[in-house]
Image (cartoon, rainbow, N blue to C red; front, side, top):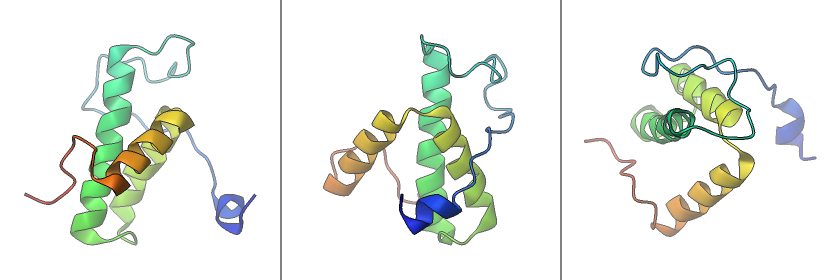
Length: 96
């Protein structure tokens, strides 16, 4: 475990009003629904857009980070990080 991992305090993602029809208290069912995936993905994209606009130390960006780390399986995050670093991720993380 790295020092950064040791300092990371995990918390459940807060209610996200953009996804009112998702039962956000039951995100970890064996079967991940489409709405859960969308919520996970949207928070991932919003975090990197926020960081690109304001920097990693901007406190509101951290809410998106906590949300996608709580909602998304690690395999998805690793895959998306690799795609983002290689420039093959289909999303636009720049500020429009």
